[in-house]
Image (tube, rainbow, N blue to C red; front, side):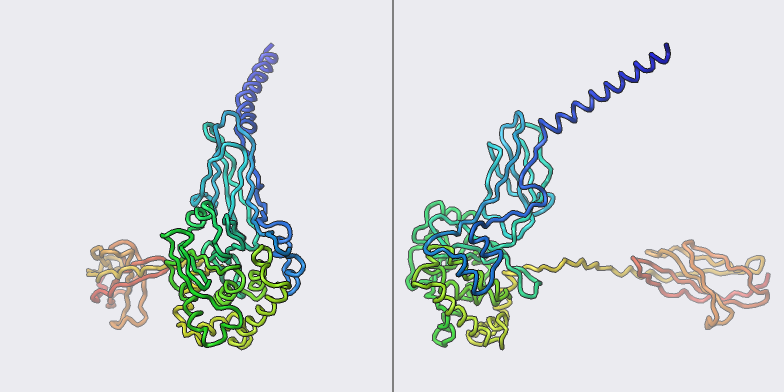
Amino acid sequence: MKRILSLVIATTLIFSFTFAFGTVSSKADSANAITCTPANGTTVNMLEGNIYEFSANYQIGVSAKEWRTRYSDKYEPKPVAFAWNAVTGATGYILSIGTKANLSDATTYTVLGTSTDVEDLYAGTDYYYQVSAAGVDAKSSITKFTTANLPRTISIDGVTNTRDIGGCYTEDGKYRVKQGMLYRGANMNSITDAGIEKANTKLGIKTDLDLRETAVTPPLGPNSNYIQISGVQYENIGYDTSFATMKRELEVFTDKSNYPIYFHCNLGRDRTGTLALVLEGILGMSKVDIYREYELSYFSKLGNNGVSDVIAFNAANLDELIDLMEAYGGGDLQDGCKRYAKDALGMTDAQINTIRTIMLESTQPETTTTTTTKPAKPGKVTIKAKNIKKKSIKVTWKKVKVAKGYQVSWAKKKNFKGAKKKTTKKTSVKIAKLKKKKTYYVKVRAYNTGGKTTVYGSWSKTKKVKIKK
């Protein structure tokens, strides 16, 4: 009977435990759980089709001929698509996206459905995101994805050939060109209200550098910093008649308050491409990245405009421009662009370095410098010393400020040759096993410590003690 009763009780407890905890777990795993895409660890491409193939597998002199499409736009970036499961009772969802794992820098999006697209994320960047349900206690785990390290094309309604020149690494790998700082493209003659809103608000463009011959009414509105300079292109930058103009163009980029900057001509290809190449060389981008960045214009309608064989025409001009810059640098393109700016245009090292400081971010791991404050030196000790029984000396003193301990020294000679020492944290010490009828000399100093550093105070006055007992 007892055995049967025990089995019944055990079965009841197991059932109760399973019901109490199993039901909650099931609810948490189904009704209140949110799973999302992109999945954790995913790499997301923001380019597709021909422009993706061009960018991902670029070769100088080959890719443009292979992939461009005459008089058509194959340029639009692809947004990052987010999706998640519905949660019963949710009145909406909040998508939080940031570059920090704790989402402390997150941008939030309120969404009624279970999916949304997010445009214009930075390329080659780790992102973290989380989806929370409104009206219900439910959220996803924080999930990480990475955007592919490819050119960052930008969509501005009514404008073509628009892109961010940031994202590339310098040839030495020590720096990366910042994104969200320099945009290039074609004219803004047909920009829409939506395009103006995006340029001003989302992209935060402060300066419109117009390289066309004639100034126009600022398309981004009266509050924009509109600068018109009739731009120089290709081999013309090598003539001294163009030096003053090129210097004016580059000086726009030495003022941090001008950023973010949108610079353009009519097509966004020739005058814009010339200025972009010099800037990219100053920043230290590789020749491959500079060629690729220039040839992205071929995927826009205006970038293919002008001549029957636009690729051959522009390749010849671009090659000539690069040859000219390399000549300034003794064969080095990056050094040549800096030397051109300095030696030909008369820019200072400070101006050139300012552009680099504004536009480059270090790829080197941050080093933490620990500053160790030297511990304070303790004061001088005043001691008393006397012979006590059993051939010993007792030394006493008062506590000294900031002292962590004390060092006692004694010897048979006044100059302390052959002295013995001992340390203590007390304010007295007994020196034993001395020789009777001998005279000893005693002194004490305090010490303070900080980390691995020990600082000693001055020695006390020496006390002379004869051992009589």
